[in-house]
Image (tube, rainbow, N blue to C red; front, top):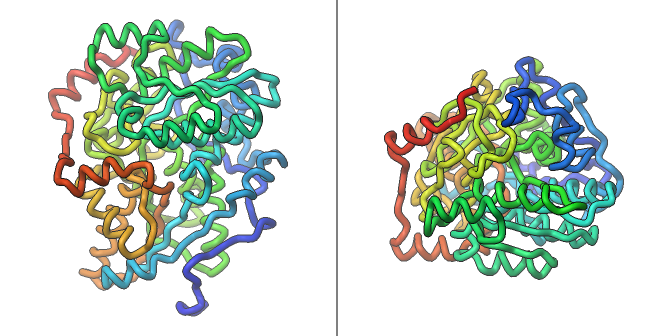
Length: 456
């Protein structure tokens, strides 16, 4: 199809929405290493995971062979409120950069939560309600996941307890208030409300918190209160499964116009957005049907892929969660409080870690002042204020487009725009006032953290 017939926004119809999630692990020859019981060192069974997660989510977490899992009608009906989401041709950005590259972004900010996180939140809330639970607990970093889950729980009339990383709780009061509007209780983490929170505060007085801390508190509350289960917004296999709707829609929209991308770029914190965006493309790559350059972009202040080690580690700071083999900075690693966005988890999805380890994708780390520079460039020409998380992908997309300008290559670039940045204006203010700095962990700091990894 000729260039001028590709619209600014490519929409699918409701009938073209995915009817099943894609389980990327089914096509992986080297499966992710299993979660281990921290007490026995043995692979966790469904029975051991059931007190923590909803029963059907446990089955999804452990399923490595079923390529497609049907999306329940109730979830598909909810998706229709904001899905299919548009695939946008960034014509204005291309013109501004004067690049021959063709740039597309999948925009996931068209819902009240303002991000892609709702795709999994509504699924996890649905399974909790179906199981007859009273409520769920969770953690949130920048607040996108907590916002999405509070909305999903409100829809299904479930209680929602959110432990929000303290630095974000203080920097993002409006995100916190959206959660409360949807009925969630929000506690800054680490807190005095849990045993593990009190222990962390005693060991690290004045700490600004981390996702690892908040996870520990949320899991403790879930396991000590009958009728509650813990839910997570990233990292887990079940989350990547639910988020595959992003990639499935992206590929369907590209196929509609006969477009094959050369590279696919996604921001990476725990892996939910990246894993969802790349899923069907990575599947083709694993099956030998097509090839793509897939790039994970992470913050230099929390560089799990690029400076972490591939090892078994706890998923939480309190060391009460299962052990996962992943690229990790160590469960005790706490990112600089100056780090403005999400992407604060010390580890990475076991699925994405295995794919990265096996050479199916690459990773880059970027400094946050350059990330906000890219965010501002994008906002001024594309009319969307991007979330800091997404702006990591924007940074590398712009860099790659400028390489095309130098070489004359007409590459097609696709990146994920996970959501909007309207609750991140404190960070934008710091950037504009020249108060934002690039704090990067030293080799010595990381070595000290690695030395504390469990001996598996």
